[in-house]
Length: 149
Image (cartoon, rainbow, N blue to C red):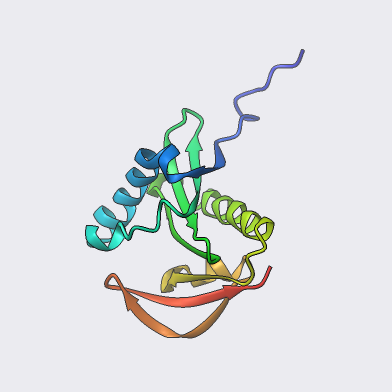
């Protein structure tokens, strides 16, 4: 029997969940990133679409929530949020990959999202293409992006 060293252990895991299964964890990450850090009004953050969406939840080795994103039934991705200490460590890419795979499994193509302008290069690395001009959403500049699966 071989033992895994601490270096071999995954630093985080991604799983797909329903809102009712993980609401507290999903909401905690979104509250920290969108409401507290970015100043999104609470009434805009909780838009009523969470119950009908599938959510990707990133958790650290202790099970604490560190990131989230959601896929709506119409193929729209959104609400991607990663806690600051975990940014730049592949969590966002893993969340996105999990939801793209789920969208493909469900036959949802193309997939669309509203990207914060600063995040456009991130989404471009995953094959998303910018459509149209920037617009304001929740007081933050965004752009529509699309990707066929």
